[in-house]
Amino acid sequence: MQEKLIVGGGRPLRGTVQISGAKNSAVALIPAAILAESPVILDNLPHLSDVAIYSELLQELNAGVSRNEDQMNIDPTHLKLKEMPNGKVKLLRASYYMMGALLGRFGKAVIGLPGGCNFEPRPIDQHIKGFEALGATVSSENGAIRIEAKQLRGAKIYLDVVSVGATINIMLAAARAKGTTIIENAAKEPEIIDVATLLNAMGAKIKGAGTETIRIEGVESMHGTRHSIIPDRIQAGTYMVAAAATRGDVVIDNVIPKHMEAVTAKLQEMGVHVYEMDESIRVIGQPEYESIDVKALVYPGLATDLQSPMTSLLTQANGVSILTDYVYNNRFQHVPELQRMGAKIRVEGRSAIIEYSKLHAARVKAADLRAGAALFIAGLCVQDGYTEISGVEYIDRGYHRLVENLAALGAEVWRENALPKEKTAQG
Ligand code: EPU
Image (cartoon, rainbow, N blue to C red):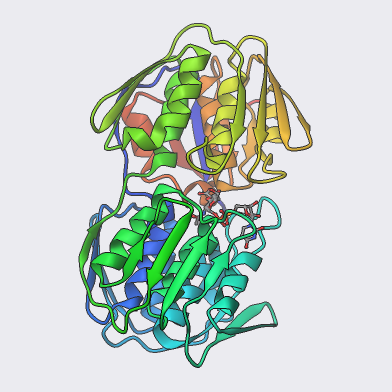
């Protein structure tokens, strides 16, 4: 039987939560390590299923991988090229980074098309355009992509779409190409800077990460190093939103407040009290909130990954809020589930129109990771009752020690296979 997350309502979150390293950095830094020819140590690694799967993928390539608490040691000294058309690559979306990393290391990669959170068709045409510009031939065969190059050569690549994945994948492949690569219209997310920082510490020559033009001078070989992963701004944002939604008082610790500016500004606009400190943020909820308009954009705009948690929060604001996602057309899998909990939301094109709603507990299903975040936040802010969330395997992809963290903040939350009779969810 699949596990469920049970979330009790009616308790404001109070206390301090420590934020782990970023998932979307970790899943790029782990494959980046195979570009080195000696061991790479990653610190501040989150405990997430995607990270565990990635370490198994590296072991399949004969890398030595050992993990001790929040540290991972990756030894790619005896790495062997292997085709991976099926198997674990299908379990996570970020397995596409194996394409860039193997291409950079061996000039060849065969990788099954990625799985993960498929909330809408998520093309990888810009990744492929980049590999081809670097001189690789790309073909597809039975659900896998075959990429080969006799010699990768630096090139100028203009991305038609600002893509985190394509920017990182091209950096990985270009790091060991011959000559200089310039990525124009590159994504600027902090995770891209984190990957460039690791690659440079491994001997790469990358300039401009975090701006729209990244310049990569290829190097012949790369070596091991030690790197600490940046804090997870999406987990941090989720706890900020949860603190506001439950009218709690939470210090979110181990964050880079600059990365949180968009969500901080939106919460303040609603009337939430938010205080920034050096490496932490305190969020104090208020009895009443104003409705607001929210636009999910590429960084430094509000992250699309936070639009689903924000949807739940906006059901607690007076009046009508409009939330528009400019990154994905249709990332609203959480809406029908929130409606089952009494949320008054309608979707029009790429916008959700959200009215103040009194939420009640229900049985709901997380169809992707951030939809799951929307649901546990909604569960926390119902007046009373237990919300039963299935699809926990999605939530495990992105929320480090979620149950422990929420429980430490005073929430009544646990995982189980079925509800005890006296605590049956409604709906
Ligand atoms: N796109 C294309 N062609 C491409 C690549 C992207 O059309 O070749 C489009 C996408 O369809 C989307 C937009 O460009 O509309 C942005 O996609 P992007 O490539 O930036 O997304 P991604 O790299 O696949 C990462 C995160 C996502 C996050 C997005 C946007 C990782 C592993 N995933 O995905 O995180 O939503 O950037 O910020 O870094 C999550 O953590 O829940 C998650 C889904």
